Length: 125
Image (cartoon, rainbow, N blue to C red):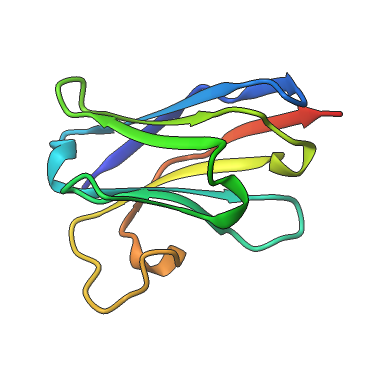
């Protein structure tokens, strides 16, 4: 069983930055694809960014150029650097992991086997 521990959420003004961290306990990060999702009140959980185990990254269109996903295998941690934050980025952000996507789309929550508890990000206008 993989436990994902997230940190780094908080309250920030529009235009500000936050960095989220996610560390899987008991497993080596390098063998997992790591994703970030977010869920605003009353909305479905949506894809934000993905870092495949080989290092390839993908982003949801609305965060391209503002968010960066990265991993530090030595620290066994994946990060989501969020710059130029907007009020519409307000949501609970979740870290997710899987070793194999199989035939699932990597931007869907059902493709991931393990989830963190979520961390709140609030962007004030």
